[in-house]
Length: 107
Image (cartoon, rainbow, N blue to C red):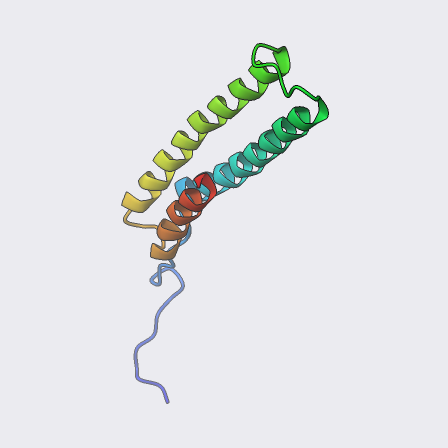
């Protein structure tokens, strides 16, 4: 039944995912994956030698710098997620899942 009200496509605005939210989500996924790879690599290097990994070896320094660098990139992703949360035009679901995913990956 027609109610007599018609809308043009230009009148109906669909909320899309914000660019900040998508960027935060992609960065979060990449950082989480790279953190996992670095931690597994550190475990393999530790298990490969009888005395464990030398704390002053170049491998340990690179792994430590990589983990710290990824934590800094993670702060950027959290900032983008908060920016997406504050955006009035973004979908509410995208606001929540970006920050929830980021928090779950950092644990």
